[in-house]
Image (cartoon, rainbow, N blue to C red; front, side, top):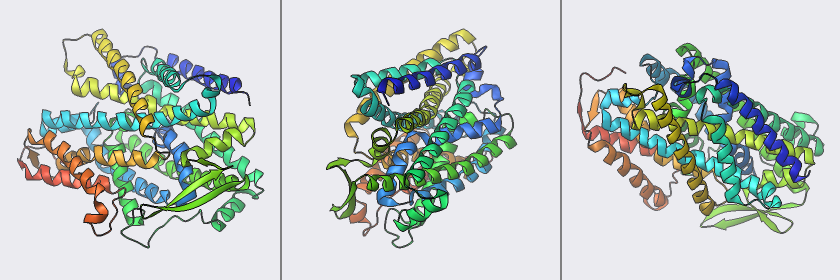
Amino acid sequence: MNNIVLLSVILFYFLVLFVIAHFTGKGGNNESYFIGNRNSKWWLVAFGMIGTSISGMTFISVPGTVGASGFDYFQLVVGYFIGYIIVSQVLLPHYYRLQLTSIYTYLQQRFGESAYKTGALFFILSRTMGATLRLYLVIKILEKYLLEGLGIPFEVTALVILGLILLYTFRGGVKTIVWTDTLQTLCMLGSLLICVFYITNHLHLNGGVGALTKLYENGYLKIWHWENPLAGNYFLKQIIGGMFITIAMTGLDQEMMQKNISVKTLKDSQKNMIVMSLLQMGVVFMFLVLGGLLFLFFANEGGEFVHLIKNGSPVTRYMFHNIEVKSDDIFPTLALHFMPGAIGMVFLVGLISALFPSADGALTALTSSYCIDILGIMRHKNQTEEQQKRTRLTVHYCFTIVFLIFVFLYRDIDDGSLIQLLLTVAGYTYGPLLALFALGIFTKRSPYPTAIPIIAIFAPILCYILKQNDKAWLNGYTIGNELLVINGLITFVLLFAFSKAKTDALKA
């Protein structure tokens, strides 16, 4: 299909988002921007949050992992589900009882200003790095497979997309994003199902049962790895890692919780969390099915799998007509060059639908956290609504520029498979948040204020050194997604060691 036609479809998609933003942003104020006036429908939030939790990273990278790893990513997803249960039953009651706008206000009430600022800054760092990594991946795909052919360079693509996101988010905030996320999740899931249906029919696999049978015969359906406890993909390590990733990246993340606490009641918010987690399991499984089908299609079209040993570990290379294709490029390469034009259009709509729930929500959440937690905008009673709005817009614009800078940085370190990089980044940056909240909820200790930021920086550095030397120091043990747990545990122990009993602490 003509690139101009595909570009027109993308621009029309943006136009729909602008229309939604216009109507949902009418009469908006700071409260509607930050927490949607606490009046969001739980079922709407649950459906829209699928798009936020999936993101362009899942859309592109998860199918690309199936060629070398089968369905073992689903081990993490089982851990995610357990994590969602814990968030809904442990953390959400705290947030609703305290009527928080920013969840990091809990740290202020429990430990004081030092913990509050440390927690908020680690969230800002974590979400900025994670959101821009997801954003970079989608911009790279759009530029490489569509806009480069029109003579539009990467820098212009990044600038235009961030500008468009800025235009439809700066007014409505959470109130707008709850609705745009719903539309985008719908488009993303539609794209996923259409692509699965097309490949199944193209390969004559006789429906879902035939597709799963073929995937099983080719070894792609393997989920559980029980064999080697030292390996990074050992099932227990993956489940525990996935559980804590969800607790940290959802339960301790202002972006995700901002949408949950915009729901009117705790009970509805908990329903939202459970329903969303169940739907997410089904959606990720379908992405893995899509990944397996893509590799069957890849082989059918002449693709080759080259198995190598690199640094003592097995590595799979994908060769397509004597050109190496990175795992993240499998889906876009096949969809845009070896499938009908209509499927290419469906792929692009799904791709941008996966991008924006993570990018727009992150931009709003970061603006909210910086304004509330760092600048204390809600505590300045002497500021008018209009003054607070001007501050909020300035911060929003500044974070857009920061996003642009990070996107350019990731372009220089891209190794072709970004999903593991995302989880590794989370392991380093969310560990201190996990430890601070755990200490507050499960103990009556209060760390010394000056020690909190020092420990929060020291522990991730220590974990980095440990991970770089894990096999040599730990008798062959490889640190995988349990990095977050190790980081959180080290931070917790150090915070506990440099703390004192506080009998008037908030009750857990």
